[in-house]
Image (cartoon, rainbow, N blue to C red; front, side, top):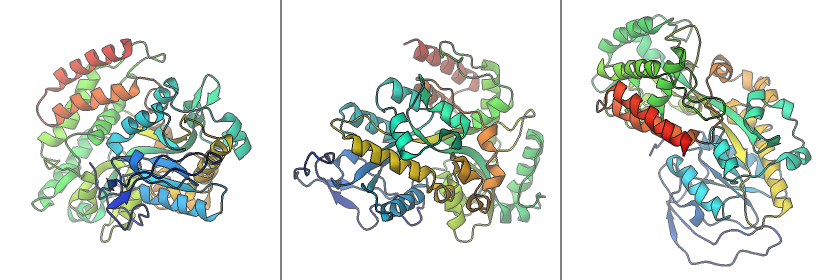
Length: 449
């Protein structure tokens, strides 16, 4: 589990244990009945392992989030600011462990005992819609004053199924590159202002070779783990920069992954480890860079806010480097608010939930941008509050140059098989060719089941 430094965390800040009550009832159903007290462990980063056991205020809307990557603190601020406006229903946040979120969310919602408000990656929304986990929000959005043209068109398309909208867009978040300016200056690397400018993989390798001999023992040129999402996202950028085709066709009935390019991309990312540019065994690569132990890091936009608060870290943030071809392809996804299907919820509660999500995406958008995310609400992107933030305008173009995941009900399973097989490549246990062959076999089985 990742444990990142959270700034200003308000959720569960004073205790490592909280007590459980029974599930809240909607307004008009009466007060929640008392339940036995059961201790619930709260992790170092504020997440809880058993969100269904958290004591909730029956008069508040419960919001389950997955923002444990450093951005949770800013969502807490948005919720606090919203509650201070005196809405008809205030919001209570519960932050789940990122790796467990969709499993816990799916189990609770399937039993119709989920939260009032949820969040989803847009790549996982087709699956939630297909399974009836979330409801259409069109009528409630109209009453909340939502104008869909105020959101990025790609986001609106991504939340629309059979002419109905099933979420409220919040952001686009991309994999970008972070630069420790002190380490690059010490290595004599020439910068374009506060950015590292390279035109291809050869130029990038020359920079890495220049940095490597200047580092101390225990430091790394690139901060990157040997498993999980971030090396997969680096592979994704490399694959599409090399000219890779979509992983599946538009209707999701055939695998269209280019095997040769997939192998070449895996070989390139693997070379970062085998050539000694990545220190083996980095568990928390974001914290490793934050603590000044790395010259570069590949990571999500959400780390920008945390790095900005870190003492003594002289850094810049920029788009993922163009290493192959002529495009700036990188990995990206998006967060959207959802209204989970729930037993015996009043229309007033549903409206209050949608009202909050729109307020968070619009009026709270400038606060959310401080976390490093790229707001989906277009007026926020053009606001003085956003443009005044350092770095954001520089990498905001990733929202348009990134290759988003396919709108496919099976993407969650496809992503899982990609990560699991590529982990073996990064760890030196599997050859790239064998890993990609296995990926193709498993992807075909996934889309045919």
